[in-house]
Each structure stands twice: as structure tokens, then as C-alpha cells.
Image 1: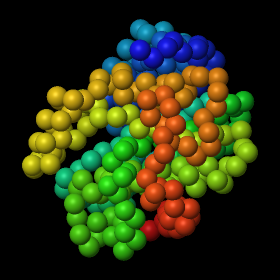
Image 2 (image 1 turned 180 degrees about the vertical axis):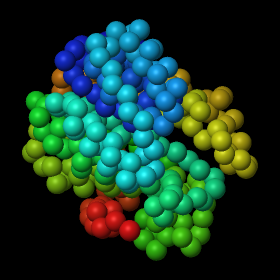
Image 3 (image 1 turned 120 degrees about the vertical axis):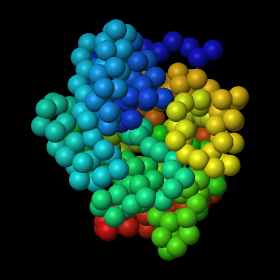
Image 4 (image 1 turned 60 degrees about the horizontal axis):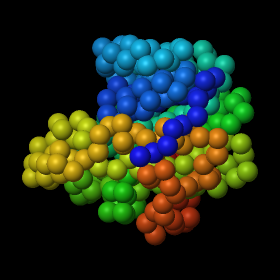
Length: 282
């Protein structure tokens, strides 16, 4: 069993995708450790439910913000609202994400898997750096996945423009997470801000439940029969947030230990190219 974690009293933690799954489980765990929480979600009712649960666990303060993180405009608006209100930020956990069987473009013209799983991580982190800089020991966590090992940066089909496969799109986005974290880590260097990626494992959450098809049914069967609990899935992210030792810059963690990602995720050339494409926008 994992050992006990130190108090997070005095720490301010922002969690995206905080209303369900590992996001909610992590929020409740950090509330029990005494952290102040900033909870981000799309559903106001679920936000109030998780707020009440975290207060019951002992969180000294909770702020909630409603936002659709598949839209870059809403990500920017969220960052501006948070920056206007919060004096500083200790932990940013980019956790919201999705796997979608159907290819749908957002109102801004981005494929929604790419927008939510990659662009939102990149944009929110860049915009919240001024708040993180005000903390003594700021950390950025990005929820990734071992699914990145099935991903490949197909530069002419990043958003399924030529060929669509929902599961592959998810795998590509998780590879993008690791490439982004690695490049951001190189850019930060010896900065006090540390960034890392975290793999929660196969978790029996509501993730992907809305999808149809053979793959979706197989995934549902796998997670229901072999998946971890949400609490187990959130454990490494909570550990990275609470422990005194800082994460290694740009590293990848799972089961409270550093893990070596795929060769593709370690390509500095691909990481730089992805950064340039993401920063350039549409």
C-alpha cells in the first residue's frame, strides 16, 4: 500500500476535469491533505457536488470555474478569470480530456480530441505561468497515458483531416502530451517551475462511456473487469503534488515512480516541431 503523504496546507491547487473520475478523486484526496482547491468543469451541478464533497473532506477553501476546455477562447477566458482573482498558484493539474469515436470540429475549427487533450494543456499552462511564478515551489502536472505508445506524429493528419480513427486520435494526443511536457521542461530548464506527465493506469471511470462500436465495448469490458478505482488512478498525481521532493523536469511518472516513455515521445525534433505548430495556432 502507498505510504501516507505530507500535509498540503497552504497549497493552492487548480484541477481541470475535476468533476468526475481521477480529477474528482484527486481533488478529494488533496482536500483531505488540507489543500485549497480551484475546480474546473463544464457542468455547474457537478462542480457544486464535488465542491461539497471536498469541503466535507477538509478543504479550507474552494473556488469553482465553469469552462469548456475544448475551446481556446474559453481556456484564455478561464486563465484571465483565475489570474484576476488568485494571488498565486502552487499546483496546476491539466487533467481534463476525452476519447471520442466520432470526429467533430469545435466552433473554432479544431478536432475536439486534439483541442481538449493537447491544446488546452498547452494554452492554460502558458497563461498561468505568471501565477505559478509567485509560488515558492510551483508544479505543473499533465495527465498522459501509456496509450501514447500507439501514437505517431503524422504531421499531415494531426487532427484526422485525411483519415479518422477515434482511438488513434486519442493515442496521438497522449503522445503530444509527452512531447509537450518534454519540450516545456527543456524550455524551463532550472526554473523553479517543474512540469511532468503522469499516467493514471487503466481506470474504471466514466471515461469513454459515451462512445459506440466494437473498440468502445472492448474498452468498457476491460476497465470494468481490470480497471483501477478512481482513487488509485489519482494517487500518483496526488503524490507528485504533495511530496517535498520536486518532480524531475519534463519527466513521466506512473505508480509513484519515474517511467521511460516511448522512443517517439523522446524525440526532441518532434517536440520542437509540435511546439511551433501549437504556438502558431490555426
